[in-house]
Length: 204
Ligand code: ATP
Ligand code: MG
Image: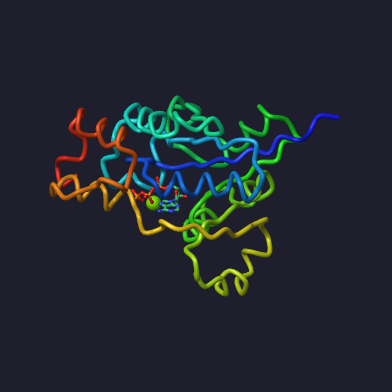
């Protein structure tokens, strides 16, 4: 019998993608013995509509550039190509249909973002379709999860990763203020950002 596919899904705005995302995906790949990690840049993000998000095409291309050298990382256009708002549950159901019922789907996310996800539309269905891998900073206090009843309803695994202090928001601010971003994201992504003059306007 063929071995079950173990697929990690790293969803994000990736505006821009940075080493926090890449370190997290790599750690999940190894710790959970995944066959590959599928990076899924969002289309029009539901929860970020207050801010001008960089075009999907730029975010998709930066994700491709950042993951190009890793044979276990692939990038999906599924959400980028879907018109309208992006709901994670729709994506997970589409992946479930594509890979079949025997595939094991692991949704990789920051531990704090798990709380957001559980308040999303259809979070119960989401919990049925996949297991969550929640990245925490070393020493992170997990008691909040252990005590909370939501964590009884979902399959959630915790994983410690370094580099958690990096964020896209901070990188965008740094670029607008002409402060350094080297070593926070891959050089080729930083070059793409400069070439396309992304994030130069502080007000956005
Ligand atoms: P923003 O600052 O715009 O919110 P972000 O850095 O949080 O951007 P997202 O694209 O929103 O990046 O994040 C995608 C996923 O990666 C989310 O699940 C988020 O929790 C996780 N993530 C973001 N930054 C890190 C990090 N430094 N380490 C581990 N996981 C991260
Ligand atoms: Mg975020």
